[in-house]
Image (tube, rainbow, N blue to C red):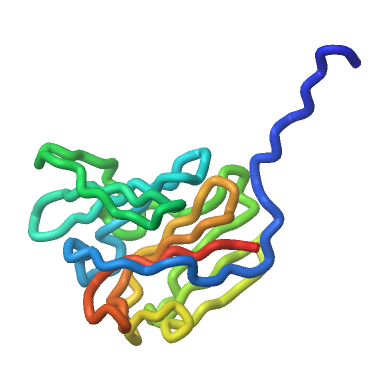
Length: 164
């Protein structure tokens, strides 16, 4: 059919996720769910909000260059989902992929079509036992970002996973 453009594929076909990067972020709160991330549609930038010490901090992480940039100012605001744990469920754009923290905070699970596709323990994430605090996923399901206490860095921060 002339002029017909097939629809864009909205989600990928991933079956495993591995650590792509980890970085420090002193604003990660040592409580489950008091930080969150939004990954843009092109999956090039991750907008990070941390609710620490009574104020909201904003940063962005550039995936290709693995750089974290702090956004200036103190007037950042975000939906309550970033400061009230359990208010939302991170999932991909069409709901094919979803992520959740394992109940005792010793890892995460990534679901594909309602079935566990991958479980990652705290050790596999490079996070101290019991110190996994939040998890989010990109629109296509390719990237997963997890906050917690990063063992190798001896600090709070984030782990970015990439799907294949």
